[in-house]
Amino acid sequence: MEIFLTILFSYIIGSIPFGLILTKIFSGKDVRKIGSGNIGATNVLRAGNKYLALMTLILDVSKGYVPVFLTQSMFPELIQISGLMTFLGHIFPIWLKFKGGKGVATYLGVLIAISFGLSVLFVFTWIIVSLIFKYSSLSSMFSSLTVLVVYGVKDKVIKAISSDILLDNDFTILLFIFFILILFTHKKNISSLKDKKESKIKI
Image (cartoon, rainbow, N blue to C red; front, side):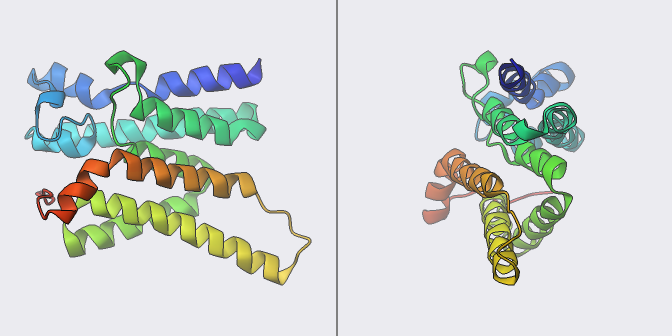
């Protein structure tokens, strides 16, 4: 019963399309018909409202954080499932015929709930890459890869120090799944980057 409730609750919260809701209410626009058609904060920014984009970012991060935080309090053994279902809810929301966002902000929210250190690493890497290359998509993909690699290296270092320390291999698998899904949601961006047609960040 606990696993069913965790899956349902996490998916439902993750599937709330805050970007679409906010732009509809405050600007009367459908963000799905603007720019890339994505419901995330980056595309909301393309709609011309920085404040709505910021609010979308905050809410998308929050919907990644809240389900995992609550699951950690009630069913700590199910936090990986909660994190994954929340992420999948954002990417494949039932309310929008399973056509959602790219999941980066929600991924960050999940990271914050599970590991504050890794979330700081993600944000730091994202900022550095975006300042250098000016591509949000590239920053997101590279940052999620960095988190995966750093956690994997940390595991190997700890094992080298002491083989008696138990490591959470499930979390390594979860980070790998997140990375693959982020690559999947950015497949059009990858193609645009190859063709040098990707839009740069404009603030």
